[in-house]
Length: 549
Picture 1 (cartoon, rainbow, N blue to C red):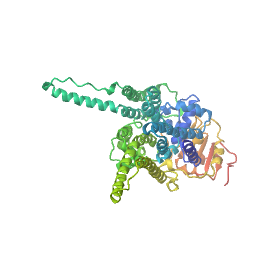
Picture 2 (cartoon, rainbow, N blue to C red; picture 1 turned 30 degrees about the horizontal axis):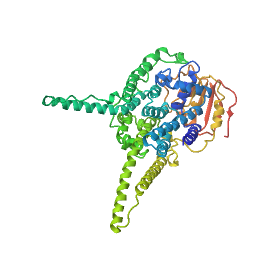
Picture 3 (cartoon, rainbow, N blue to C red; picture 1 turned 180 degrees about the vertical axis):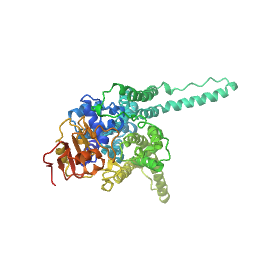
Picture 4 (cartoon, rainbow, N blue to C red; picture 1 turned 90 degrees about the vertical axis):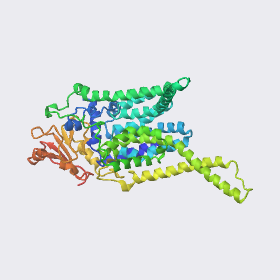
């Protein structure tokens, strides 16, 4: 099942790329960040530099886990490397989920089915298809962290927690939720002890009984390690922000072209991260609908494990108050944050579903026995029927869950042709199931740009030139980035533009092209983006027409 998921998700990710459905945000920025780290500029990427004045992706997200990805990208600097890595990392989360299921349920096949729900869930696949994101590490990290704590391997769990904390700024809140889950028995014991102590103190003057004992659960290693985990997570958030906002600006090298830069504008510190906006009324029905679909994607089993819902509390509250609906929309990378806690809760809720169905089945059998005996006293049900019924009811439960989840997944997922959105607001659905004509020709055209040459590219073409410190991307809207380091006085050597995003090409570039300072170096007339043009400063030769006209 893991191998099948990797194959399908990687195939569909490459289709999106070859249909030019990817862009600088959020594929090109990771390509350029990883490439620049191997060339003297730690995680530099032009997108945030030209838009917000950040000289490193680490100033936007403290995603130091990227340094584990950088060696792989250095070996094979291609978008396909990131697609393969993302598919494998996302799929591998099914392994610890299966092990959690084996331990909680005690039997292999229900564990296989529930881990499979994670793999087939539409929120998992759709998030996987949307370019490349650091959130893709969360499913594996959270599943491993929960597994190690569940099996009392706390030192390994702490290592996983530290890796999780340097993945993204939201990670400390997710780790705190895991710690709360395992601390809950101790918290409950403490509250009970306080209540008993309060009751004893009220009646202390009316008897000579001894004071009640204090809470014992805190002496359990699980509670002590969970307390340590929570402290580490809570302290990590301000530390990460300190490094991101204070330390890094003072130690990072300047951008590759600082002489072109205008005055730095404020960074994204006030815009990004968990900056609460307290907009509960914005799209409330949409947000609740998102969480309903998330619960339904795992057969509503998570509702049968109330304690496990603690794992969802931080992200649920954040999405509820956020004024950006992308956080609670299937089609974006943020569903990676919610999908693993939901899968764990479903696993923990499954034994209760079995018990409920067993009770229901037993009542039906009992009613059938009563009617059978009433009509014919000699008709006695065999003693083996309850055992056989128990096995059958488990099979029925799994079968019903599988059918429901698979049908729901197909109905709302990207494998349903009716859900293809070739031009819409849900990027994870923007994919067609066929190789797009013209992609290879555009790759040949991009290869005409010399390595290291200053180039300005359309956002959807930027991933083809991202392995270049002097490559800059336009936006996907008809406006320029805040501090694009090009203009009439210092134009780029190359302009690489797609017809469907010509609206974003700056007026000064069109002016220079109109006055003959740019020549059309090459053109691809047939491509998913419409015609693709490569302009070269000072070029006066013939235009190279690549592919059919």
